[in-house]
Length: 258
Image 1: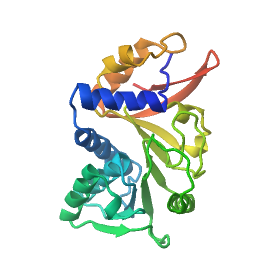
Image 2: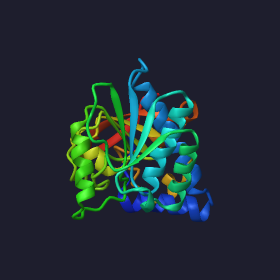
Image 3: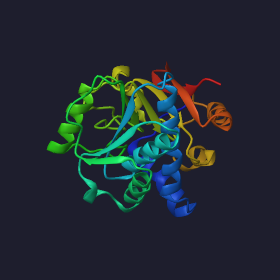
């Protein structure tokens, strides 16, 4: 038994329900996502060595990365924020997050890091989220090239350049880990594991009922509402969970260990 994935339109509908019907502000969900991301990054660097580079896009995914940077700095870690498209392209909420980060003394750079260093570095990929669509874009190509050069990249929601429905990747880098938000995307289930790394999922406050009744998800085997209940029981203990992908009845499913 396990859980199905969400397509890009289904995830967009989840966001719409949260913001328009339940009136949960995107800023609150962004805070939950960024805090969980920061926790995961710390868990993946138990020695505490090195520093963190956050590669932030202009939209909400980038805002989540900026929140993670702020939380990491408040916990005493060295962190820098890089904006490949520059500060002037940030949407309103990510810009507010950036101003909060700067108030803590975090250095912000327009562009990408010039070179890697010998100091251990965790790169947080918060450039593009589940809404990615392929287009000719030299800035994105430069970001993808940089991410391919780093050995320890942690991606937020989906690896940048990955189609969250199909799993097709235009970036072809190998994250160390990916922390998806709220629910697994179908693309993360179908793509080779080397293009996602270890998979984690973070609770950002989406009510379980949305998945039960609002998205026309199939709950026939290998999927089950029991697995959905198990996911939320796990979230009640820890908002960050490791994901296991399995194959049943010729369909891919996922679950968490609890």
